[in-house]
Image (cartoon, rainbow, N blue to C red; front, side):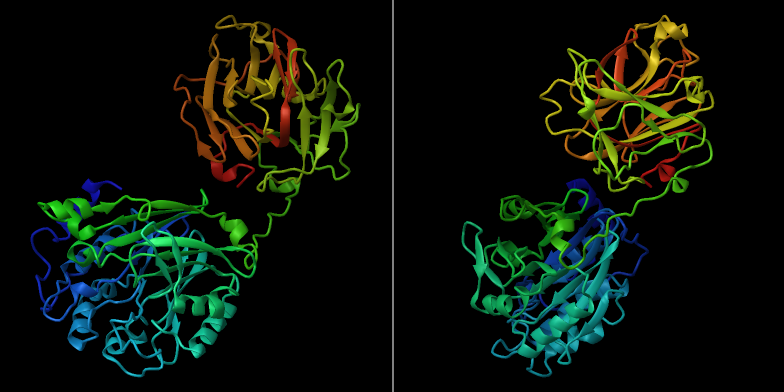
Length: 605
């Protein structure tokens, strides 16, 4: 995030120069509600905002609610930009558990209440009588921050009978997540309640928030506190759904990772800034979950200081904390971590009918459960019904295993199978597939546009074993055979290839030009399946990987594909009519359609 965008919000929200109460516990008046864009609950990247101990901002006649007000308004304004789906306060809202302090803090939280912004709070030792458990009965804290406060929020789900513990469910990244907000000293009955909550949501990952759980040394290494050990033994250790815990109370910030009874990692974090300038100034932690990258990126910022027109020397140092204890990334394979309680069912195979869209010219799939070598003389059927069948061609000196059936497949692939090409060059070796003589595709010019799709996986050693410029799919015949004299007429008429760095390239001679038209993609990662699509709308060609449009697509019109009325090759590159190498890697389903398809209609969709 950029400072300018933060400051832009703060100026617009009236937090620079006016609009908030000054020092002391005077009456705080929230600003009028305005329409704000809500977060995207399906986006794989979302943010959890965390507010630790704000107690010095509400300390008898010594406090200042302005920093917390700035933080809450900043969160609201950034809900869409940062996809902030939930905010958790970690306790010690106030300093002395006084009714006036709690009422003043409650007034500030009306900023969230008025717009039904999802959040949770919990009692720290300064919010209640610290010598009691959650069975302490009525309190000023409960009057202000009891369950009645949260019932109108879309994420609130319930509380313990005593009212001091709540749980909340928010939706993000296309699934539900649960936040357990536990009291300073939850009773045994509360731990039993928490287990029942988890039992009622057996497939939901859980973030546990409480005030006292781990403490950290000056190096940021955390360990369980005495009370934290009780929570670990009595709840966390045997509850595999709890993968992240957040607490305040102690300082400095820190973190650790412990293995639970299932052998899975639990990340335990402490964050607290009350010892810093201005009692921490309602500084916040932002936990940016990125399920596409299997990472949580954590940053620590002060919206209140960002809103200052001029900053003193101390404020300059507190705008954003970038040391390793406050700005870091946590790698988590979410699918693997949640597999014990929420396994992701693999996408089942889909029959040909599911992908035989109108205009399909050829559709080949390689799901042969018998495995072994693809035999000589085999005919791989074109399931489009157009007669564009494939047959095996073995290069001299290569054996039957140069082309093998495989059970490997992309998770979104219609057929759960592939063929493995064990090819190479200098000399050319391996085997490939070609369309049969007389196949209609051999003559097709695709003048009205086309979509070519393939699922591909490269071996881990592909870069170290010299397979530069191998082809996934190519059209036999040199450019000269199709009457093309521009560029290098010995180049193949069309080839979907991988460069020496394994960057994708679609290079071909179109009908409307004498020179080649070339699309470039980025270098592909070995050891991972990907889906590639070449889409031409009759004028321009666009290259896609996993449904994402790539950069280097030419703007010069390219209509159709020239032809010498010869076969198409699957898994072979040729130059000047000589096959120089067979493919090295796995190829899954391949499809050719006679018009441009949007990504929503690709085989992976």
